[in-house]
Length: 235
Image 1 (cartoon, rainbow, N blue to C red):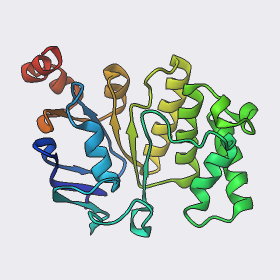
Image 2 (image 1 turned 135 degrees about the vertical axis):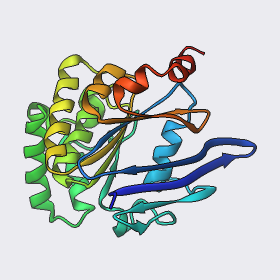
Image 3 (image 1 turned 180 degrees about the vertical axis):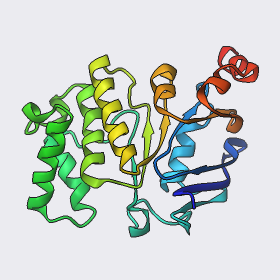
């Protein structure tokens, strides 16, 4: 059984269909790249999968359970962790507080959550700034906070929106190492990225969106060589 499934998902804003009939399935331990030109509907699709906006039609299942109508905070969605392109940190809180909150939200005791958060921040290289306010950190450091959350929450599914945008190669290497280690433990991930070499190196399968609809799907090499995909990116 797939860990995450979407069937015929659609989202319309007035007359515009940002997502137009997308179906996909993510296996345990699979990293899937979700790519496409600007405006293709990638972030909207992640929002639908994460329950951050309701679909116009279609369904989302997590571990076989229909979670389409459930809020992101609902217990049945706790197996899923979502990151955001512009970072999802609370600026007035420290790095360790931001990471600990993710564990506390899933029922962990505060003291154990903080200890786990510090260990996770050390693993991603943020131990020296663990007590700094998040709004004093660089954009790349704030994105690493998302990866520290992965380490304390250990979700079944991670939805990552442009994790490498604007970050240094060193931070990209840390992200890659975390994802490979978590994949070995069974993490399934959907990664939206314009950094095709980085994400194609990680993923086993690529889904290309254009105009809110699936354009191509397959292995990285086959998708990269698809004339329709090349035309969509060059259009």
